[in-house]
Image (cartoon, rainbow, N blue to C red; front, side, top):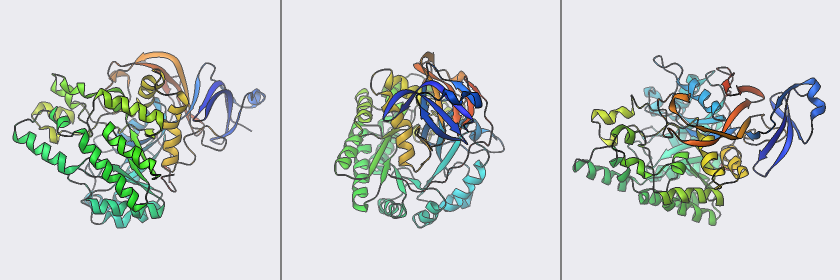
Length: 466
């Protein structure tokens, strides 16, 4: 017997849309049929007339911060923000160097255990982790099999920054993970090109925040992406390129796919909605707010990202959410800190669906079915979340009731994340989330949070890269 029935809505899947009722029992989808009104007398009924019924969004790239004594609610509050935005499962990185213990700085598995302990019983929605591999660790590649055995089938390596993996270790990591059924995520920027450009800018006294962008040209992303694709080919390994921002980099992913390589790539809402014009602002803090790596690109690059999503050259959209505060981390720009030491990243965990729908579907760049694919179905499949990402019998009942007819503006004061700003301040968007269900339980009802801290489960994953 069902314990929840959603009636009258338009159910959207990656394969199509139709008017249907959805019956939920025990936290899973039990039936999807045109008319399940016969069950209404024995179950709770939610009327979704006039609304889209979407699978919960799956955000596979966030840098949510764990709780500390000084800020005990950071992880929980960002999980609540995700729910408000229609996300029902998110993956976080364990962010070495942001408060980790000395042991976690040296050992991949120590960092994983520490992160699991710090986040347990703290999330309002379901979550998982991708371990960030640091070149400062003793032997992280040797620990990758144990990581996969612990239910974490993806890890991220950096080709740039002072904690990067060198090319040999990066290549080894791809192969080790592939043989264990896992997948490596790669931040693709070339360290030789970028380190030289940063040093040159600083030598000339160009320390302002806007020089962050000019020191990280698109071709530096392109050449690193080409190298990562070549490594994936040689290792016969699934590889996922994170936060791809430029047409130059996208070309190399497209070519790798044409060869039949098991590679994928994501872009982010900020590359789909914003451009490098943001770096021309006269207000130094406003520029610092969009200090992101890779930086915002040209309008032509933005258009290439949309075209790549529509064509399937890009596989998914993820936020790369970093809950920095203008008054704290980004405020360094007003305190004379040079661009190379300003915290990278911007918040986005609550605005994923809002920006992607408004800039994509409402503008005719994507169909709503393709939007569901890139925000839910493909992220879940690619990252080993077998019960997530689709409205299908037997899957977790992670559902979003979305009002496509609504119109609103995004304001930081209305958001729930732990940042004090949004890069989309004042954006007029089409559509809004009305209600959200995680495993059949209501977390957002009519725009209000009705969930509980600790309801979210840590999802152990078997395999990735499919």
